[in-house]
Image 1 (cartoon, rainbow, N blue to C red):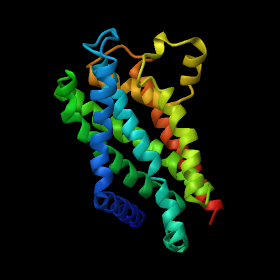
Image 2: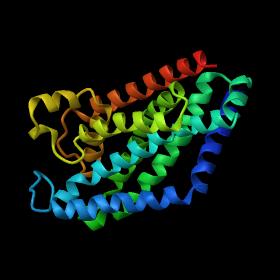
Image 3: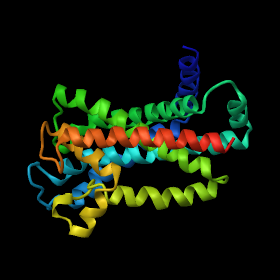
Length: 250
C-alpha cells in the first residue's frame, strides 16, 4: 500500500502538470484536425479497402500519432526534474525505482489518453460513427499503447542530460515509428522491406489494433489478441528496462 501511494503521488503530479499546460490541450485538438481535415481531404481520391474514405482510414492512425507524440514527449519531465533537483529528491526517497517509473508512466499515459479521448467525438467529421463496443475497446488499448511509449520516452530522457539532445533523439525515434506504423497507408500494400521493418515497430501493432477496434472487427495484419500480447510485452519490457536505467543512473 505504501508503494501504491507513492505511485499515486507521482501519477497525480504528472496529470496536474499536464492540466496546467493549456497549450498542450489546445494543440492536441488542432494538430489532429489538420491531419484529418487538410491532409485527409487532399488525399480523398485515394480509395481504401473496407472504409468509406481515406479520412476514415487514417482516423485510428491519427489517434496513434497523438498517443506517440504525447507519450514520448512526456519523457522530457525527467530532464526538467533533473535540472530543478526534483529527480534527485525522488531518487533518494524511500521509493523503489520501479514505482518511480510506473508512476511517471501512468501519469504520462493518462495525459496521452486524455488527448486521445478528445479525438473520439470528432469521428463523425470523417464519417465514422463509433459503436459503444468500439469505445470500450479503444480506451484500454490507448492506455496500453501509451504506457509502453511513455516508458520509451522516459528511457531516452534518463540516458541524456540536455533538452537539445532529447529533441534530436526524439525526432530520430518518433518519426520512423510514425511512418512505419501504417497510420497513413495500409502496410499490406507496402513493399516487402517496408513491411518487414514495420514488424519490429510496436506502434504498427498499436495502430492496427486501434483500426480493428474502430471499425468493429476490420481485418488486421495479425490476429488482434496477438497484437495485444505484443503491446503488453512491449510495455512490460520498457518499464523493466527503464527501471534498471533509473537504478544505475542514481
